[in-house]
Length: 71
Image 1: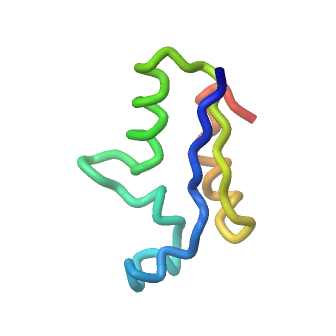
Image 2: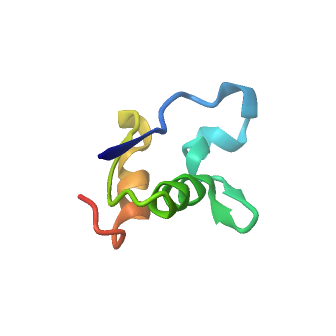
């Protein structure tokens, strides 16, 4: 089974914070929000995880996910 994380959108309700980065890369409890979603899926036993994001912040997301075993 594959888990899918939808990490797109513009985050306009978060104001200026999301003009520089994707909302899923903002830190919550000391870690980027995307980490919490990935940990939840891996804790459930999933090892194949797809992250869907927009082109605007794709490079930043790719950089964050490097080393997680993904592409």
